[in-house]
Length: 213
Length: 213
DNA sequence: GCGCGGGTGTGAACGGCGTTCACATTAATG
DNA sequence: CATTAATGTGAACGCCGTTCACACCCGCGC
Image (cartoon, rainbow over all chains, first blue to last red; front, side, top):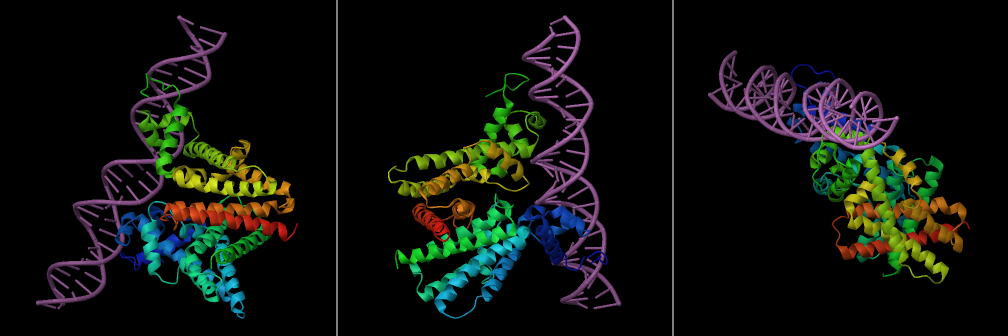
């Protein structure tokens, strides 16, 4: 990776990779323009040839991390056996949540990077994330809810509420276990609790349907 | 508030108050040693006569904010009509969650200050928060669960799991609406969703009891 | 084959931050 | 009244993100 001469070759890619590594071990706070430049033997100002600034760099990396969360969820969903569509829809819901939670456990730094919210980063991220169709956790959740709707376990009008419900519980649990008061739970207990959380969500969604549709 | 002479009078208190105001409108990121000192016409180094550093100042303010969350929950619980103990226990659970969520809505800056988790602030905070008995949201939740246990709707052994369940959903929902993708929800919809979240928690807790006790 | 323009990297600087330390000032104590 | 401990000062350190004038080099059009 030693640079040949005056030019670096692909500094943008190199910055993204280095930033990714930094976030992986230290979370989003570990991403510093100057430190990345130092690591790549480059002047700090060179970074600004490839990114508007620190925020845009973080945004780009956050999208990368979000895509990884989405992939993890998709992988978990892929394990759900097909069969009775109703049962499968339920299984997909559970897998979606479990995939999200397990990713948070296995890559806490990237998880925190993906769902970092401060600094008015959000608006831009939301827009761009919606652009990267199918590679965001939001999309995965919506697909899982689609399955429920198709099977008749959820009405169209309850979708928004159902989404809030499911997301709240799963995201909250992930946060509490990654950087909250539940972070010192041992792996086994964590798994048990995770199972109960998705079970609670499953029932909550059923109730959603039952009370209206 | 103009200082009389060389000494300030009660700089520690003044710093805490100013920091509180800053966090109230701008969240924890808005708390800066230098800016607080500037606002109080004091040298930045003077702050270090009263706090070990930035982190301890934030910790102190975070405890103050946590106490306010606890108060808000307690106020909401006080509104629950007494009567059938079972119904009341359920009502207390709901009020606990609603109080938490409403506080997050009415004071987002303080809410974020209270549950800020980065920078290894946590260990110290957890310890000190436990010291300030009864004035932390954790204690409020535990009391609400106590009520469920007394009424027989929850077994002792399921307490930990129940706590994780309830907290995950409520905290997650609060976060998503305060600084997450649900932050642009209108007040009415927000209330409806909040109701569903606590309802989901109530059922989840019942399920907890049913599957074991 | 040459020169030039535009993309890329440099180095120094700016203002901000948290923090430290030697020093000045004051209030309280004996 | 003299000493001491507490409190505030001012200048510095090293970090950060960011800007700007400048140096460098690749590739395009002549």
